[in-house]
Every structure is written in C-alpha cells, then in structure tokens.
Image (cartoon, rainbow, N blue to C red):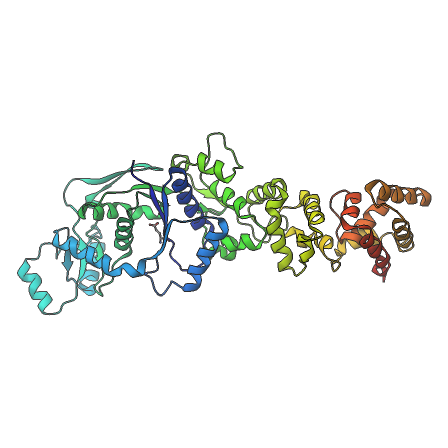
Length: 492
Ligand code: GLU
C-alpha cells in the first residue's frame, strides 16, 4: 500500500490556536496510526500578514504539544516560481488561458450581471482568443492573469469526502477562476495544490473552510495529471454562541500558549483537543498516546461542529470545564515522576525552585507533590495554592485569614502554646501531631476544628487542602513551629 502522507500547513499570521492545533493533531494521529508521514509546511506567501514571530510561536506550540513532523518545515514562499510554472504548464496543456480583461472591464461586467440578475461569473471573453490576438496583446504589453479553463456544459466534479461523504459541484457553478494575478503572483488555491502535489500528500485533512477550494483544486490536479489526494474536511470549532473560534473574537483565550501558561499538561491538552469533533463508539475520554493513536480514525470525525466552551470572567472556570477535567485527570493520576518536570517549571517561573528538591529533598518533593495534587486542576495550582509547601514566603488568603484566624482571637494565645507542644514532639508523626492538637482542644474545651482550621491557614495560607496532619508532616516540624510562632503577628 502507498505510504500515507499528511500535512499541516499553517498560515503564520498569529499564534497557533485551538482549531489549528486540532487540525495538526488529527493529521499527526492519522500519520502515526498508518505508519505514514506528517509534513509541516508554513504557508507564508502573504508576506504582509506573515511574521517570523508567528512561525516561531507555532513551532514552539507544536513542540510543546508533542506533535512531531517528519519533513519540513517547508516554506511556501520558496516555491512561488514553481507555482507560476505550474500555471504556465496549464496554459501549454490548454487547461488554462491568459486573460487580458482589465479590472475596470470586469467590474462593469459584474455590475451588468447584478443588474440583469444573471450569474456573477467571468464570462469567458478571453477563453477563446486566437493565438494572433494573444500575441498582439502581449506585444502591446497588456497585463494578464491566468485563468483555469473549467470544463463547460453538463458535468461536475464529484468526490467523496471522508467526513462529509459525496460532494458534487457542477461545472457550471465554477467560473474560470484566476490562478495567477496580473502582477505575476500565484493565487493561494494554486500554490496550496501545487505544494500538496510536490509533497506527495495522500490525505488532505483540513478545516471545513477549505471545502470551497476543493473542487477547484481537483480540477488543477486533473489538468496537471497528478493523483488526487483523499480529502477529509473537519467540522469547525465554535464557541458556545456558535461563533467561529478565532484570534480576533477570542484573543489569547484560544491560543495554545495560553494553556501552556495556565498549567495544562501537554498530553492532557492533546487528549482534550482530540475529543473536539472526534469520538470512539464508546465515547471514551481518556487515552494514553499509544491508545489515542490506535483508536483514531478519520471516520470517527463528526460532521457536527465542535464546541469549545471559551469562558470569560467566569470565577469558577477559566476555560472549558471539560478541558479542565481532562487535565485534572492527568494531573492527579499520572505517575508523579511524569508531572515532576512541569511542577518544577512552575516553581522556577515563580522563583521558588530549590535545587535541593531534586537533590537531598527529592523524596520529600515527590511525596509533597503527590499529597497536594489530589485537590489541584492545573500545574499552576502548585504555586497559587501550594506555594507554602515550597517556600517560606507565602501569602495568607485574606478570606481564610478572617474566617479561620481573626474570628477566633484566642488563637493569638493558643498558637504559641501549640508551637511549643509540637516542637516538643520527639518523632514528628501524623499520630503525634494529631494527639497534641486534639489534646489541646480538649484542655481548652473547644472543637478541634477551630485549631485545625487556624493552623491550616497559618501554615499553608489557604483554607483548603489535604488532611491537616498530612500537611503538617509534609511541611516539616521546624517550619510548622516557626510559622505558628510567627502567626501571632497576623492579629496586628
Ligand atoms: N494555510 C491554510 C490555513 O492556515 C491551510 C489550508 C489547507 O489546509 O489547505 O488555513
């Protein structure tokens, strides 16, 4: 069987967004599954909109996601001569022609068509110029475009899209479209097809918005005698209001780097994106890399649009709750060693990474990460909620302070007593710590909960977390004692 060759051809006019990442992922999965190749091609022919920064950003995001490509990046702009040569070949073969109609002439014809309510198509004026007429116009230096000669009369382009099934486009509904502008620049529809031919692409897996180009591109393939790839068009990614996900409407909220910066694990994000408009018959949601590659099929791509639940100013979820839940799953269930580098990254970013965490304190570090992750959703939670475990410089959440400490003024007197008693423990263990705290509560005739909540807030800065006695052991005797002694200043 022929080797599968897929491609991901982003236009570098901004960051890699969710829709683009999803396209890349589907192409990558299909290539991986079939033992084929993925080609990365940067479609940078629109010099005004393309930027080096965007190219680097896209490549970085792909790398972060773990999407690997086998060839490229190729740059479309380096093949412009080849695109134009293909158009010239089309002219030689009689499948395209030079069109000398000027902009003004075309505009007049369009107006006329609008007035008479007839088809707004190019009328084929230059389709049948004689060689003499062509020579004459060229000799006069009249600029020209190149138009594809679309078959006329009955007939249609018919192809089977892997996702949408049979699609038919009548010849009469396709005008003789321009493939090279009068300034000599090829049109995207041509460049894209010629690049796919050169890269021997067997499967074009792209967004549904590419569907408008497909019949035209099939005509180009046919005219050049090139094998026609298979097409799989994917439904669009929409926000809950049914607007297309885009940089313009959603800003950074739909950028891949946003998720990297907000504590997503790359594989979790890939897993989640794969579920946007693709599913297995049993609606499974969590896949390891190998499992996802095995389970993936183009046939599993749905025709219905995928919804990405962008959230703005939602205090509860900063993004799609399903995306968070997939990430949470991985964060809590992967072997702790696998998430360790990402936690390290967060601590470094926050300036609280201690080299000891991978030296003498390595076991402690892994244990602590494992202990506290059961309440976290994203890796950044380790510094926003978990900072006190890794640094002595941590803030006290004002709400927790009010509720768990300031409301119980007696704690001002009790904290030092607690500190002394915990300090006196010979072997600091869960049992011993618990015993000390419960005993003091009994002596004072108060609920142990008052002490427990107060200690938690003083020692960790927050109101919630794993069982307090686990927390105390993870924090360590010396630091717990220090923090409780210092806690009296919280009342000032
Ligand atoms: N450069 C196009 C885009 O970014 C790709 C179109 C295609 O896949 O053919 O939308």
